[in-house]
Amino acid sequence: MNAIIHHVNVTVPRSLEAAAKHFYGTVMGLSEVPKPAESKGRGGAWYQLGPLQLHLSIEDGLGESCISKRHVCYTVANLG
Image (cartoon, rainbow, N blue to C red; front, side, top):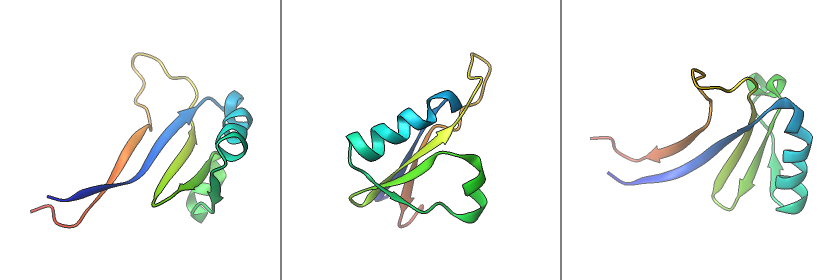
């Protein structure tokens, strides 16, 4: 199976959203790309990094029993 990374989703609390956007957009110089309409109201941002994307999501209240939205997304040509 050949797989490539499509995107990585990182999360921050809402209180750090502006600082994270400044870091990824200004300090790191990543280009922000439009989010799909269904995701725009959730905050955060999507950035292009060469052929990959970095998705910044807002996630408050993380603790031991919390299921996080952080993930790595792979694109696979053939699962078989």
